[in-house]
Image (cartoon, rainbow, N blue to C red; front, side, top):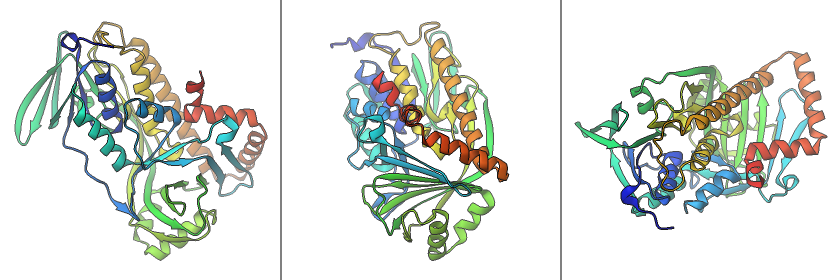
Length: 397
């Protein structure tokens, strides 16, 4: 399709993370003239055993979107099963891709190679201009949006028809527009690292709900390397960071109930606070949208964070077809209502799940186990849960 880009709506995308970069590429492919603004190019994150400690779980729906913009990284690790159980339970759930007619449930993707591939495509695209600087102010009128940028101590301005903010949980655009964000402190921190295990992970994502928080062992392309996301109370997480490597490996072996045998080695650990938050507006001005973490931040226990951001983009693209005037009054009303409702449901569901598994009452534990056992015997219900969690329901229609 030949598109007259001289008449196309100009778009600024603030934030060059996975969601922002994918948004810029998707819109540029549709003929929009796009400027991507970020403080700097992404830098490689901490690594160990030849892999990035940071990783994201990508659903089939997210993978489809990345492939459409030729941005799928080579280092993606397929996981075909997910095993979930709890500290005080006797029942466990196993989700298998085969039960949903798929060869995989999703992929674990290292952040550094993912961003490297996205930014390679950004550099190559003729419809995309890269601008580096920090957003300090945003002014909106019925005709334009003007961003003020700090570029090495000098203030510059950038005008555009339409602004998309995907600049993270501490969104400068959201703050500049004075859009409030409701926050739900979890009282937890996530300890992350990479470990080498005695037994192969068998392309399985393992998750155990402990009373102090969930522990996830996520497979990599190496059968004996797993990424760790261990959600704990702030006190326990702080203590966890002070352990020696051997002490940490022993604690992790016990906490994982030796599901992969002994934890043999561990990379340096990092910890960050876990908070859930939701902006009060998706479309605070007819010329502005919030996407991804700028809109909402969720607990990592279900691996939904970046997938919800890509889901935002998928729904945006259903509206932002070639030559559509993105600034048309009322164009984003339905989108904004649906994304806000979807975010609210996910935030409350994840908070409820965390509270349910963190309740030490034995009667609550008995009810949990009874419910898990009942759920585990309903294959059709498991299939529906898999389809919802991975986006397969949307792919199959």
